[in-house]
Image (cartoon, rainbow, N blue to C red; front, side, top):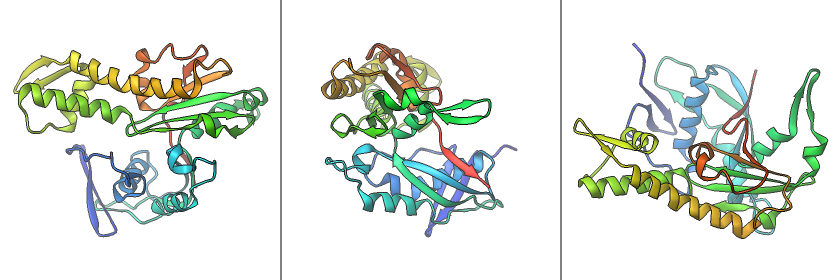
Length: 277
């Protein structure tokens, strides 16, 4: 029988992951929380790395990684590095994956590394042309949207930052609209996800068209992100490339298709960097 719920313990608290009602991750301390640590452990086990030891790289939003003057938030970075090294026990008969080394980088910058590192027949190398030209990375995630301008292998901080707006805002607006329309007190995460994806909500055995609600929620979030990007970059005439990454970039693909002349959704739009041994 296929297991649908997985339980983990860390620092005296027990968490359930899987086919359960979702807990919101839209809170300030999520990147360094036990909830984040448990989700990461579950991902490691889900991809077959239980018992293994890994080197990992994870990210912080640009605004959490850098100060406005370009200096790093060293305290926040060290805290994030330490958080994933704390032990998470599976309550099933499975040994945990271990993280022996944890590098923290600005979240959107991971996509730039992926862009400039290319595979060749004799291994991997850095693409010299891609290293020197100005590239903007727009990472539309669940809680926030990061945008990072990279030129000559350095971040242009005046054109980089974070906006606390993402796909979870779309979901919340859909939830608010459905609850108001159908006089509901609560909704499961599964129903919300299906409503956003299919533009239909099934309640008490009947399908209801909520396309207007979903479109309005997406439009509001897209307009906020677009306005911030335009404020920082204009129409991007000096850009060589604009790369969109994150789950939100795929979900909102048709709505962001014409923001820049040379833009694309990155080939690996959502990934975790891990090395196991």
